[in-house]
Length: 253
Ligand code: SF4
Ligand code: SF4
Image (cartoon, rainbow, N blue to C red; front, side, top):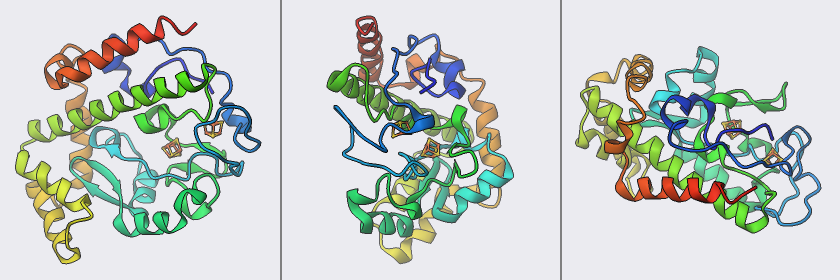
């Protein structure tokens, strides 16, 4: 897998000064998917189908990433997704279909394919902007089990980065903790079906009829956030995790 960053290239302006270059990984050969004939230590059991690979998944995309998508990809995401000010989530209906396939569906069920997967290219159509969960998915690692655990640590960090950036942007754009709580209520399985539409509307507030504009503006505002602003935005334990990731990379040669 072509991989020199620990994060998606789109996050470079925020993270390239904070995290080191990624350790070399040569076993996850995405063009010729290694999980078609899995061997050795692998993250999932497999085998996967080569035309689906590990993209039978619906990732969360934060608001500032959604602002970079063209019309075609934006519309594709709408089909099985729900747009919220904090970002894009898989709809509950699509989650239900996913759950009905269980673990067996991963890598093997076309109905679960990500809306951003390009069938004609047999690869991700938003590679530079794919989220942390995808960037850190290695089906196998040059460093064995330790490498898989390392990537899981980086995933945890990137999930936090995405959530904190997305909620910071909501605040900077006039939405507050109530709207953040409404977003959480929309995706909670505890929420009653007849309440969900109300929560979606409440989450968007004054932006309800201007969702695409909201995402584009959140991307613009995000570009004004500097790497050093993140010292205040990220939670202290994730600043520690960042140091731990950097120090671990220096041992992975
Ligand atoms: S990371 Fe995904 S696409 Fe790449 S080799 Fe592994 S399963 Fe295949
Ligand atoms: S965003 Fe890209 S890498 Fe992630 S699941 Fe979708 S197609 Fe695959």
